[in-house]
Length: 167
Image (cartoon, rainbow, N blue to C red; front, side, top):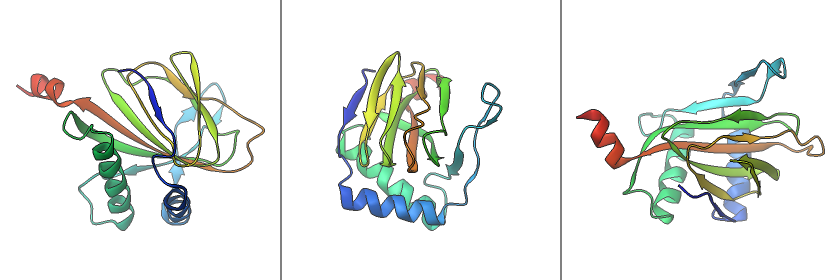
């Protein structure tokens, strides 16, 4: 899939309200440990997408479904999971990695951060949504960023691929 950045797909007022709500209500845990950094790279939360009575999970599910629908992806892709990342400042990162055979939709809330996807840098701002394939990607360190960022990463596969693997 070609990487596509959708600026301000979440309007500023909604993005700010979601950011504040998630920051204050999510029970954040230590995210991925980076052996290179020798520390936890960021805080995280796994959303029990569509299977929960949790208000937090319902808010995230509603947002994800709304944006997939708005982008016309809801009929083509099946959601595998939703992982929410909390970057406390520009020192928190997502090291270079990939998710084979998956497509991601990432909703950015809060501070502006870069994401590198297959060697190209994209700047994501509050309310931006970026959709990309399974290529190598990372959120690099940006020491000049002093404000927090939350990203809602939705992991998907094409429904046709899901049909093939389950038969």
